[in-house]
Length: 114
Image (cartoon, rainbow, N blue to C red):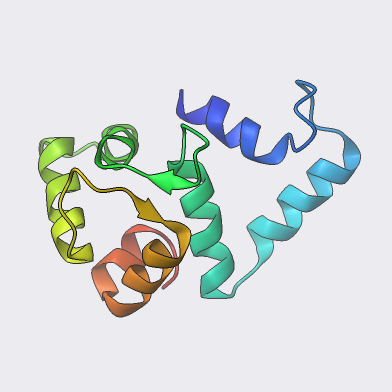
């Protein structure tokens, strides 16, 4: 699930393969050190529905795959949504996600901009 979304992010022409230009793009994005690029990549990986929005469930699913801790992924997602200052019924757009991560050190650490 998670890895298929990683693949989909870089398979920009959706032909089921990663060609050389898509590989170069993936390398360039992966090697960027600026916070916005890291957050944009995190957003793209979280947005498994492809609707350009991130939902509570998408964050919970991501945390379930990422965290090996004994903490419930939905509890983590609830805390993350609280840090963004939104209700879990709402979805975050890319601008909200990036701005929220930049304002909160913990979110920046979780999503790779620190």
